[in-house]
Image (tube, rainbow, N blue to C red):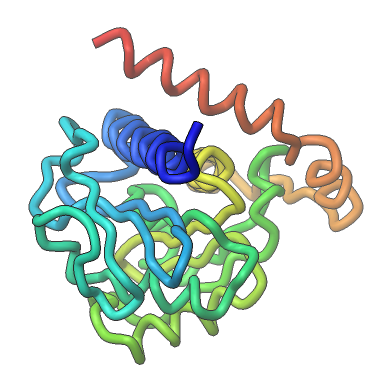
Length: 233
């Protein structure tokens, strides 16, 4: 297969993963009418869903490619205003190849009252420390994107106060699974707090969870679980 054909096939696969990730997150009510997913491309560019697209019915035609300054390099739709959230993280983190910006209910509730995210179930420990950016505003400038990247540091996720979440990964599948784990953990934490003081995994227990559960096979299993629900429609 010629190199350009292989490149087109790879690009198509990544765009399909972005579409599936957004649609699964919409079905799980982790993404609403807004929210976006991106994947790094070669040459300082990225794939991202367009700003006007309907997340629950997203198609590959809704995926555009832009450079890190927001200029279109593939497609004709307008990217989301918050593209700097993605581009500035990619500039700062060579290890990141996929980013999700979600609007999850439960983890956002924690930020509204200043309650720190704490790992209360095994998969929730895979996120590690989850810092909070102390602003609810849209991340739509390079300087704000740089602040998000700085807050995230070398971690897997950060929360935006009274706004949403940012999750990063080495692939779309890993990024999706971590986004699902973040919200599942937050819901369990919130519900447990209504009854009493939830048990928080110790540092040693968290380390064991990360070693045993952050594997390609188990991340794929999470993806397949949500994808099966999507295909029931």
